[in-house]
Amino acid sequence: MPIAPGQPALIAVAVATLWAQPSAPGPEDRLALGSPSAIREWVARLTNDTRANGLKGRVRTQCLLGTRVEVDKIEDGWAEVRCPAQQTGGWLPVDQLAHPAESDNSGAEHLVSATATAVRDEPGGDVSIPGVTLGTRLRVVGKPYRGWVPVALPGPRQPGWVPQRDLAAEPATEPGTPSTALIAAGLDAVKLAHQLLEIPYLHGGVSAYGLDAAGLIWIVYRQLGIDVPRFGDALVEAGEAVEFDQLHPGDLVFLDHGGDPRTPAILAERSQSDLPEVILSSAVYGKVVVEPIKDSELARIKTCRRITLKA
Image (cartoon, rainbow, N blue to C red; front, side):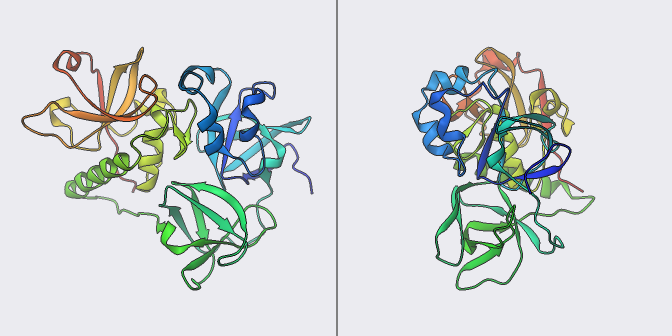
């Protein structure tokens, strides 16, 4: 049954790019349009300027494998969709969508903890979906077999198999989490952000192949089981306000960086002798970097937020 307007669908490729309109991609973007999508190769072929500036106005965001979207329109092989989880929408090739599988939704959700993995048709078999990235949620639907676990997939291909070592159970926290746990979660956020250093800056990016500034925050906290707003206007209101001198590692600092006065960054571990440092995906440097905050910049920091653990 074909994908049709007015119905839900699931992202069926590792990373789908949502475009402003079907005419937005150029010849250089064809690798991002296939099924499977080749996002790593696409990003590698783009210049730093294209990743930072050339995609503005053309790319809205990206969605990971299994993300639920609502289909609004079908036109010449393209689908206009809304992504409730990110509170945005855009266009993508219809071939990158699949119907939700008919199942009882049993099994526990896990997160891909490897930078990238692949879904195979059987343990050690042929690759069904390459390039599944860090932060992708997969539902384990059976028992492990020789280091492989079966996972639910969009559409009729059931199940897929992923190396057990590449998955981690989604973190869960209880209401009334003590402050020590909040600090520990912040240190985990810093550790995860450090693992993403050198990942290319990509406007609209949310994967380990390319991240924009808010995308770094989104994927780091997703690994902690916390869904934060995808975009800046909502992100600056997330969690609770904190004064700069009361910040813990993992808290968010909104900097004046590269012409954007509210660029989100993650506070790194602080030292009494050194300048405080933040980790951010920088359009200026073209990648995820650690950057010290100079004394002259402190007065320009207007917003700091602490992301609370989910209840």
